[in-house]
Length: 213
Image (cartoon, rainbow, N blue to C red):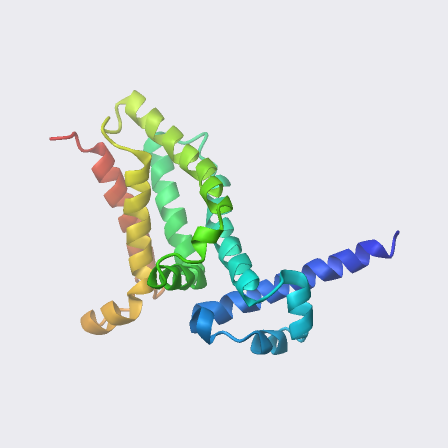
C-alpha cells in the first residue's frame, strides 16, 4: 500500500509535466500543428504513455484547454476582497485579471485558436460553464455592495464588467506585436506594464462610478 503512494505521486507529476509541455505546444502550433511525438520527447516520456494518461491527441488538447480555463477561474475565486470597499475590490479584480493574462500568455493563445476554430473544442467541455459561475458570483457580490453603497451605477451587470476587463486584457497579449510595431511600444515591458495595469482599474472604476445618462 505504501508503494502505491509514491507511484501515484509520480503519475501525477508526469501528467502535470505533460500538460505543461502540451499547453506550450498547442499554444505555439495550434491543434493541427502540435505533434504528440514531440510532446513526448520534450517530457522524456512516450507517446504510448501520453495516450495511456489522456486517451489521445484530442483528449490531451481538451485537458490542456480545461486546465487553462481553470487557472484563471481559480485565481478569480482566490481573490480576497471581503475587507475591501467595492471600489478597491473591483480594481483588484481588474488588475488580477490583467496580471493573469500577461503571465499566462499561452492561455490567451489557446483562446485565440479556439475562436479561429469557432469554439469546436470548448463546446466539448460543458464543465467550463459551471466553472465560471463562482467567479461571476464574486463579481456580482462586489457590484451589489457598490450599488447598495451608492458607489456604483445601478444599471450595470456583472457580465458587462467581465467583458470590459477581459477585452482589455486580451488585447495586451493578442495584439502586442502588431500594436507594438505600429506605435513603437512594448506593452509588456517592465516600464510600461504598471501603467497599463493601473489603467484598466481606472477605466472600470470610472465607468461604474459614472451615473447613467
